[in-house]
Image (cartoon, rainbow, N blue to C red):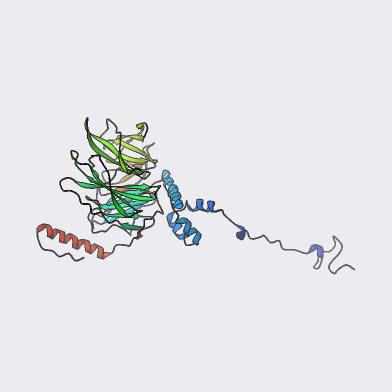
Length: 420
């Protein structure tokens, strides 16, 4: 007798028929068996924004350790910099037209300009210049002597002030200090350069000192060159190397020369210069190459773009223009966009090929001609001693007003007591 429920083949489909018994087909859950090699995870994470990576660092200890490694930070910055070829992010420094406060803003077209609430620079100092950014780090300082130096990572929202050396400018010899920023990829350190500038006919060379973020110390550098710098900052930084446009005297007389700081040798080098130029020249970083814009500040102008090669010197790359409706050319971004300004203070980003306007913006609350516009790429790079930037409150503004009032009393000869 066959077992209960076992009928002949093909007969019966009712309950208890073994041939018609239904079985559940379960699909195995793929999640426990899902695995990405470490190399793939690194490539994925290195292409994410800093804000996302900071959240992901809380996922697990392995990810946190990975994101803080120097090799990963370098890979992430390379990817972040490559994004500028499709569209640049801008860091903008300006002064408020009423309060005179320093304003730091970020602009990424087509999004509007965003003012950063947490400004690392003390608001009670009257002037602020920006050097860089270099490797995602911006250097803020107070001219003319390059003091109140603050290193700042906008993406990480951290900063630290740099204590100055005991070196003092020599009265009658040094006129001001020019500040430069460099990055030594082999040592993985930022370098701050302070050049005590001398006059064109000075019998002594420029005094140079360098601050290393690895040792956190200043060091005097040997320099035998005499050159006159008219800017408070280096003109451009290309792949971690700062360049200055200076004036030197040789057997042919006074002439413009390009000088760069060799990060490896820690010395200054003189580069050849163009013979005959137009009214204005701008040293720029164009696709990680040192370039120069040679132009005249006038409507309907053409811009000659020259590129520097260590072996062949300067060669003409192209001519951009005519550019119409602009009052002044400000410079060029890494992706080639020309930065121009009209008489109303509106800033334009122009396509170098078609000369058309790609984007435009204005800083409504800023003073005229107080804007500094630089390329910006996000970075995870931090310097020992950096702390989160705190929002400056009313107490800081009050301290600035008291300090300003005390300085005015000192100038007119009235007694004053400074209690901040």
